[in-house]
Length: 310
Image (cartoon, rainbow, N blue to C red):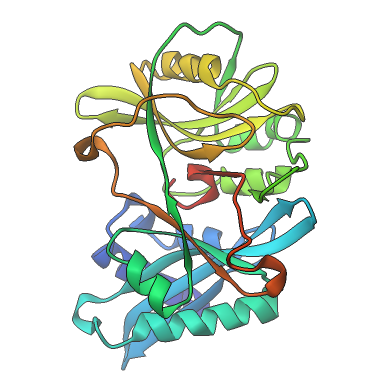
């Protein structure tokens, strides 16, 4: 059966990503099909640039919805900016970006774009695309301690998503009193946790807190990466320590890695040396509507699961 134009383009984009930004996610086009087409908040806004029959550049924004003290706002998350090496310095990304942002505002009613950039790309996108640098994403190492409370653990697979997920993931989309937070609705979490070709997610549930993790390694050492912390109750602040220790025990890890910040569940640990940290990640923001003005935007919570790291 012949592929549709959309399917063929996703294959080309996957191949380009696999060449320029190798990752297990690009083993086939299923990840992009899920990422751009299955989001419960709407389809992704994608752009392409070609040279004849060759795809030379690709960029996408996907819809997210954020809670704010003034109500819900439609946002976009920026990802998969890639240009073929032989087509660098031809302005492909800049032209695609402006096209995508205009479409995001019109087609999705988006108020702004949130992105994560490395140290090299941050200055040009701030200068040329009017992004604001919000700051680096902090990284913490949390040594395994005693697990002082009961925590239930499940690997996230299709069976879990079709059975326990509905009960476990419901009722987690709490209001905010300040700042902006990505809405953790059951529909969004179910979609986000079903991503193909990624590390396997694990979910951990205590009386007050839900955590999501992936197993990892630092050299020969087993580690746990905590990608999301979500209070089960609408309480001001709670401790993450006991649950993170239980996550380490579950994965047989001596320590956990956490990147980001959480206004309701602060994570305490130590900053690893630069040589042991992942590539520096900078949070950036571009306003598409004055109701979400660039210099008024503040994130209450942002973690690995709010982006596309896993």
